[in-house]
Image (cartoon, rainbow, N blue to C red):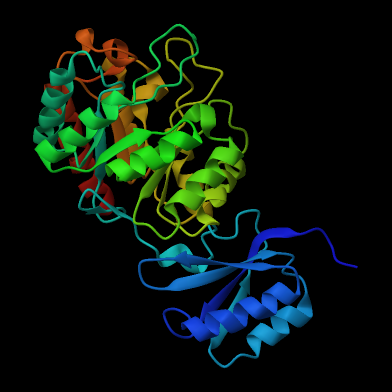
Amino acid sequence: MRGTAHFTSAMILPKATRLAPEQLTEVTGIVTEFGCKIQPIVGAMRTIYAIVGDEREELMINRLEGLDYIDRIDRIQSPFKLMDKRSDLASHRITLGGITLGERLLVIAGPCTIDPKNLDYFYETAAAVKEAGANVIRGGVWKPRTNPYSFQGDTKSLEILIEGARRTGLPVDTEVMEEAHIQLALDAGVACLQVGARNALNYSLLRSIGRAVAQKPTAVLLKRSIHMGPVNEFISAAEYIAAFGNPNIILCPRGTSPAIDGYRNHPDESITPLLKEKTWAPVVVDPSHSVGKATYVPAAALAAVAYGADGLCLEAHVEPTKGIGDDPKQALTPEVLRKTIAQARQLWAIRQG
């Protein structure tokens, strides 16, 4: 009698960089006999093949290992098989905004929310964050709000976001909140889909994103849930996306609850070394939401880099007091952003030795 089915617990590593079509057909035929499926995971250097189902069927493993074009079958005892630091994806590198994460400090910056009634603010902010040294422009198109009567965003803002990308030549990042947003963003040319804190454990949405970006160059910035428990839970959420074939996942600590008195949340950039001990995924910290006040953000950003972050996600606006959403409270001015980025990159260089 079979045990409980496992989720992508074994990975097939071919001797070549990928299986030939006829080889993939043969492998698929074998695993299908045992009620499993094959999911290709396309990395920068090679493709590996996850077995989805109950990989503990020894006869199936033996047959696969007997194929002369298979190097080995990796079975990692971990709740997150693909995201685990010991997986074959450990050599995978993510490039976004001309930056290969881990080689240089990535900076994502821009307003919390795009105001469709004042689109010039976004265009001016986009130009300013590029001038300040950012590599990717962020801009909220659809916004989750605790108050149902607050501005929830506007699909029209997606056109404004893409126009900002065209004007600056920088890729853009925006949050998707529901399945319908995913394809709209991808069709528009969004380079990085963001999963916000309120949806970080929305496994249905994570699966939908995984399917939509499978074997695409699109990156996914996964924020840590406000009420996130163990670090393993954070990494396992990323596994839902990776399991469908896209390993371009960036983990983003952004503060949790309960908040520290005076801060918006409980700053959690200190989990960066722990994440790096467990997973190969790059870590980009969001100090803006972590502390929630512009005057505290530069120090929190430097702390994140000191802890080993591969990048920063910063809210910025040309005139924060005239922004909407969280911008009046936590967005940096272009000048403060420029100084923060410069100091963060100096610290990054020191950290690299």
